[in-house]
Image (cartoon, rainbow, N blue to C red; front, side, top):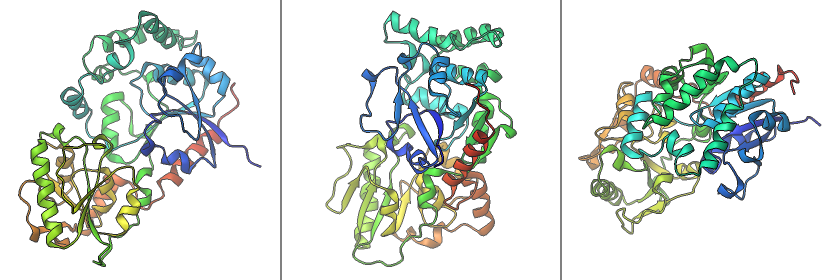
Length: 404
């Protein structure tokens, strides 16, 4: 019986929608997750993989020596614990990976959005503020215990980096202090679209990145929209969470929902709205007996009987765009949509679309534009991204020597 390779993962594992690649690859790898300082902060009690806590370890080296992982997968490196783990892993010769989890635009886009939507969502507030002095010291000591004799020359830059992010009001300071020790060994990215973000933030080179497709879209890549307009068919809207962050008021969003529902009623079909996790539980959305709001459902199942799919900038729409199987609505001040437009993606107007425009001929891309879109945003639209991810991790861990 083949022994599974142990991999330590720093990940937002409370987000069930971000766990599918790990679940699908659990026959190959023994996943160990870490996120919270202690069990007292834990929100995920029903979890299929091993969970660890920072407070259970004196240093990142204690954690690594205890688990002896073949590799370390990191969701991001703006957390001081994750950064310390990355540095210690590299010191021990354990390969570290940044694993992408969403579509990226420019780094400044996220900084500006952070200030506009959640100004408190910074390293300062996440890691240092609103905690006791004892906790602050414990966190900082763990951070600096990543230093050993061979990498102690980096002590000054680590101190300067920490000082800068503590004084900063945003995470923009991350991009202002680029040093190789901070970077992961490899960046596993969905496509070319995400490369510029990490080049700007971390200063990586194209050879530092490996493109493998979007594993969260594998189940949607080969789905075709039903042409059979039977009584079980419906319109499906892939909702964007917190449209207010794009300058859309709740009133405007509800007017849009009412207009789309009127089109659905005219076509004698129901309107299903797949809510974004950020909008789960909202009670202020337009209500009508023809509308059904859905959360915690698998998009793959919803797509099967949809006779038309609508979206604004939901990632779930990406594999449908080059196939001309999704109607996108254009809103103002949406940089994601602006990026899509640069690749000749067609849109309807969010504020003034008409029933006659809901016609498949209005959303078709020519063959070359469709291929260019796939190359930029999807890498390959074949539903095999998880398989490629498994091969990448296996290739690198196969070359690992026993260092612990």
